[in-house]
Image (cartoon, rainbow, N blue to C red; front, side, top):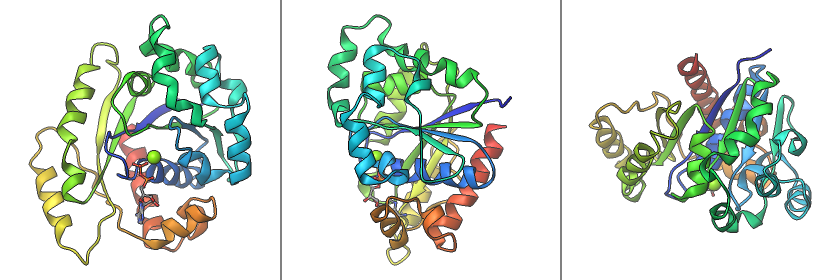
Length: 262
Ligand SMILES: Nc1ncnc2c1ncn2[C@@H]1O[C@H](COP(=O)(O)OP(=O)(O)O)[C@@H](O)[C@H]1O
Ligand SMILES: [Mg+2]
């Protein structure tokens, strides 16, 4: 029986590396022998596309077998889990219908806690070491659901001036959920897409280091074209090209996360 930890990857800024980080941390943990469940909480289906063939992603998105249907029916998520192309990783795929989730939640009782309730049995089954949830680039009722269902939060931040812009809003948003998500701890901020040809990453690191009480992960992720080739092949870079810089960085990050979660 495993003690399951639930981690979400969230940031209202799109393109900050949430889906790439969620899938690759999952792949690195799975490679280390952990049992991992991924939950795709975004209508863009990017997490699903990292571990499933495109045809399957589209088939699940149009079927009843996706997170959107489960949340609408307020169903136990056990029946929505599917196997992936990677050992030790299962996923609950998403649907493009997720675009209307905010409206659907509005009429439901205790609407902030629906994902938490739907996930309860899976979490308590002890089947998984880690459940990793990929959030959409928004700050609304659905992301509140994701925070309420999680033990830990990781905020990926792109190393760019606009990557930092809006981060304060994200912190404020997380603060406002304290009463309904008292279990949630901020695991840290992860710097992604560092380009050493530009000097800007130093500025990003300095700005983040000035934030009080915020852990910045020791391991960062550099720009690496292997990430895109992996995604083009519906794979994580950790499983696609283990020797690449980003794959090694994700493996190191997964170890850091695993340590912090103990
Ligand atoms: N380390 C990296 N090197 C190169 N490209 C990356 C890297 N990380 C992410 N990307 C690319 O950046 C884009 C945004 O990443 P993604 O994970 O989808 O961000 P988010 O989920 O926050 O919107 C994607 O096109 C992805 O391929
Ligand atoms: Mg994404």
